[in-house]
Amino acid sequence: MNRFQFVEDHQRRHGVKRLCIVLVIARSSFYYWRKTTAGRAARQAADAKLAAKVRAVHRASDGTYGVPRITAELREDGEHVNHKRIARVMRTIGLAGVRLRRHRTTVPDPAAAKAPDLIGRDFTAQAVNTKYVGDITYLSAGGGKFCYLTTVIDLASRCLAGWALADHMRTELVIDALTAAERTRGSLKGAIMHTDHGAQYTSRAFADACRRAGVLQSMSAVGSSTDNAAAESFNATFKRETLKDRKGWSSEREARLDAFRWLHRDNTRRRHSHLGHRSPIAYETASATTTTLTEAA
Image 1 (cartoon, rainbow, N blue to C red):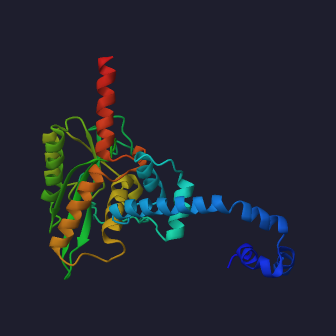
Image 2: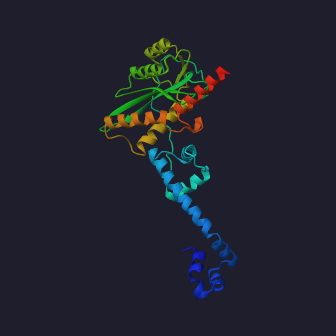
Image 3: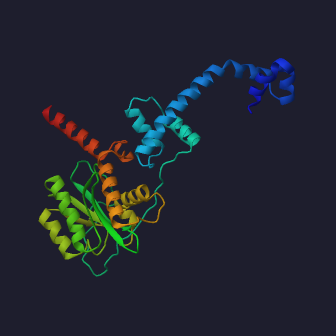
C-alpha cells in the first residue's frame, strides 16, 4: 500500500505526526499528496480512457504498432498526446510493437551478367515512379512446403506497386511482379529497378522484361544486404508482423490469405515512419495534390 494512503486511512486513530515518524515520511509531503489527490484521480481516469484507445489502435494493427505509429494514429484522430505519454501508458498495460529482424533469401549466380549500382544505398526518391527496389522472400507453408513472395516497392512512397506469390522461385515470379507494377503505374519507362544479385534478377529473361518496360536495371554488391536494405527491411517487417514469432503458416492457403491482407493494409493503412507516419497511398495522394497545386500556380 502507498504510505501516504496508509496515513490517510489511520490518521484519526494514531495522528498524522506519529504515523509520519513511524513511516519515515515528511508531514509536508503527506499534506502535498492529500492536496493533489483530485488531480491524480483525474489523470488516472484520463490515462484509463487513453489506454482503451491505445488498445484499440494496437488491436487494429494486428498487434504490430509501437509508440510512434500509435501516437500518429491518435493525433490524426484528434488526440493531443505526445509519444512519452503513449510509451508510459503502453508499459502500464503491457503492450509493445513488433520489433524487426533482417532476412536474406535470394541466392546469387556468380556467372551471371551484372548491372551497375545506380542508387548507391540512397533509398530515397524525389518523385513517385522513378526508383524501385525488389526482392524475394520465402513463406514456410507447413509440411515442408514453401511459397515465395516477390515485391516491387516505390522508394518515394514505399508503395508496393507490384507483387507476385507462387510455390516456386523461377524467373517468371519476378517478371510477374514487374508486370504487376507496370499495370499499377501505367508505365515504368525511365524508372530504376534495384535488386540484389539473385539468379532470377540476373537472368536474361528478367533483363528482357526490364528492357520492354523501359526500366533501368540496378544491382547491389554481391553478398551485401545493406545495398538493398529497403527491400530487406520490407520483408522483415512483413514476416514479423504476420508471423509474430511463429515459424511459419499451417498451409499455403493461410500464407496467401495473410500475405494478401497484410500487403493491402501496408499500402492503404499502415503508417510508415519514413513518410511522416502516413500510409503509402495517403502520401501519394498528398504528393499528387501538392504537384497539381504547384503546376496550377
